[in-house]
Image (cartoon, rainbow, N blue to C red; front, side):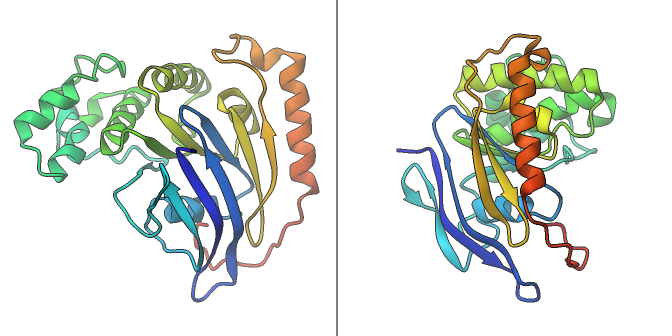
Length: 260
């Protein structure tokens, strides 16, 4: 049974034509699956549907076989920005999902504290977000996301604001953490290189309406070689994906400034 399944999902806003049409996605246990497509293809809208923030006009979202369509709070969702609260310490930011569920502050801090070393932020508990580097803030935000839901994480371009070296380090780190805690991830990106480096499979999303145009399997075992991005195999995947994206028809109609 897939960890997460999106079945025949179609979604439209009231004032906009169909944004997503007949979307089918499968995420297996321990996988990282990327959604790759141009801006306006509906990637963020699809995440809102998966997270239960939007209810589709058609289709289902299944988590471990259970229909969770339109139910928020079942799957964790991390946006581009870390969204750490500046007036809370790092430990209280990370423990926030537990406290929201009714866990006492002391117990929530204790539970969250067990993961600080594993997530590479040991020693930051009493600091405030402004005292951390961009990479450390993202680690803290990812731990908070994990504590919200330990099965599946939706990550919306979480590393896009980082510099190249920090981003590369975060890629290696996240794959190691995923493997350790058996976290399954759906990952939004515009970056073809990032998708190839991180993913087990890549879904290409065309616009508009957003449809799955292709599924690319990255058939390279993990952990991948440090120089994988310099290999001929990597370049072959990149050529294949870029070629398929260029072949995808695009509708340039206005979306009224709404992020899709």
